[in-house]
Length: 550
Image 1 (tube, rainbow, N blue to C red):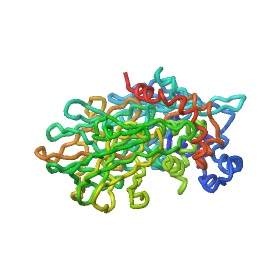
Image 2: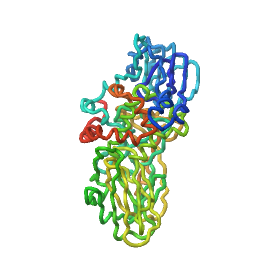
Image 3: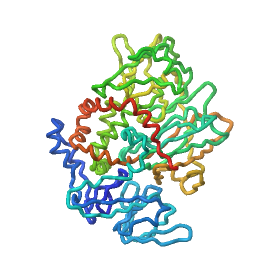
Image 4: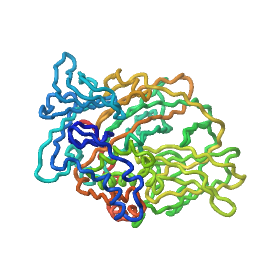
């Protein structure tokens, strides 16, 4: 971490590890890129030194977070003050003091200004106005006679709801949520960049706003932070594609947009439990799902689709799906195994080169994919692999199919048991490519109040909007014309930083953390009994634990 003190952030921050007030060290990714996978015992000699760096073990840090309106509560004994800005930058100031101001107080001090990627922008003296601050962080170091874990974070558990405390690995979480009107009321319609759990995993995400209904020539989208997370949003665009009568527009995983017609549901849809065609008929919230295997969380299942009279011409398969809470549980369990080392581990991802996507890719291959196959004369041929991370909002994706002979079409979906909720599966005829128009917010309201200072931040990658639990922004977009029907998509980019829980620290197990990287298949076998125990209550706890300010 780029702290000038022996600190560990409440949020899993994207900063290099600091081991003393005067020394900053970056964790070397090479310590585990070439770790042996022969056994967990041997792995420990290579991988665990990266995860178990000694961090001034004889001291304990008391960390406090304060919003700008509570600036008077900052502890003057803190040698360094970290100032998290709303645009994602970070000040680390020493010899700091507060100057009153008629409209906004100012914090003065000497130190370093870091960019959103934690590169050094400037060193010197600063005067920071509080009206552009997201969060103040103080750290007071106390000596301890015994070795103490430095990342026991009280704030996470302190603000958990009573419901969430019953099962902390089912707490609501997963990136920004986006609410849009369907013509009658505002509904949850998208979640942004769900797999971007660290700056190194930041990516562009496109979500279909399939049921969105504009209000004349404007569209309002409410972006919320409803979890115990820090969200860093680079941009939030609306992509508007003119829609012809009888035609809908669909997006592929690679970001292509296609005009399509002749939406055709399957004549038969058979899963292990039997016929499931009613659940896949339309994007209506009636979902087909299953439960996990009791001994193997990577066990697979098959859903067979049959279309007796498919449309002519180039075809695509439209899939409406979202993940269950299996991936949420696995992510939280991985953080628990990392325990007090989780911050350092995620920080290394920014410097890890090829290892960057190892944990995500490993689990993605086991639980995060829907494989699409087409029947041939003698076998099944894989034609596509679809991925969509996130348990909150159903997304509608287009899978382009190869040229297929006329006649009955049989498709097969291979997916992990208990990992997916399928809402729709339908064939479409691909008419031609669509070219949507990219729209930026014309103005923004924060918690219902106009916030003219951030609208341009959500338009490009030069700025970043940082949000904390309970933040709510209403983004207003103006359509090119109000007499044209549009298919709407949300294009967002950013990353989020999960906050740790006190109870997770008690589960720290660095050998299991090594297994997470190098042998996730075995870990999914070992975790199966525990997940089966809590699986029945996961869904109710998850939705009941959304975080909102009073």
